[in-house]
Image 1: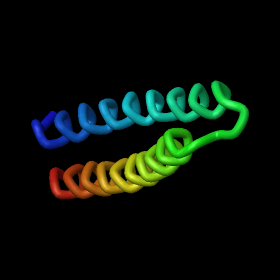
Image 2: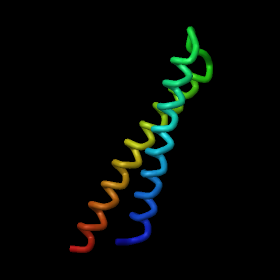
Image 3: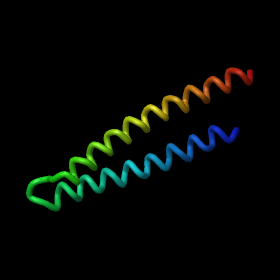
Amino acid sequence: MNTTTLLTRRTLIALAIADVVLLVIANVAAKSSSSPGTVSNVAWVLFLLGLLALIALGVLALVQSRRSRSRAH
C-alpha cells in the first residue's frame, strides 16, 4: 500500500465525517426555527458541495488505484 492511497483514504474519511456534521447542522437549524434561515441554507449548500466533492474524490481515488494496479502487472 503506498502512502498516496492511504492519504486519499484518510482525506475521504475526514470529508465524509465533515459532510455528516454539516447534514446534522442543516437539519437542526431547519427544525429549530419556524422558518429556516440563512444558517440552514448555507449548511445545506455546504453539505451538497461536500457530497459532490466526496463523489469526485472517490472516483479519482478509484481511477488512481486501478491505474497503479495495471502498471504493477
